[in-house]
Image 1 (tube, rainbow, N blue to C red):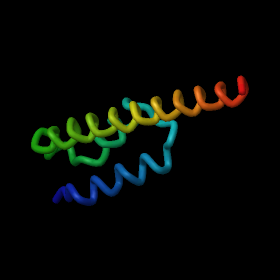
Image 2: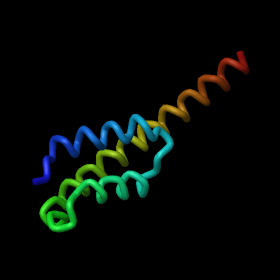
Image 3: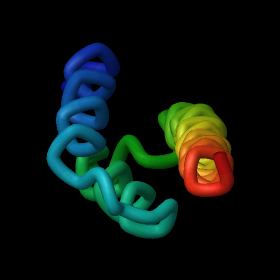
Image 4: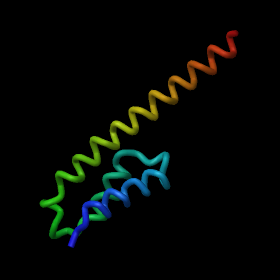
Length: 77
């Protein structure tokens, strides 16, 4: 039986272990965690996880841009 809570923990661990992982890598990982016979029933969970990971990636990008701008400002000063 598929355990959604275990799935969420595994995804969080994957993110920690793969900080440079892209969306397609994460989706491949998620799809591997769900038994083939239950995939249709839990496709919503993969979609939800995908949206959440897109948010994480966007936040990382903003953080990187902010850090770069800060460094540039310090070089100018």
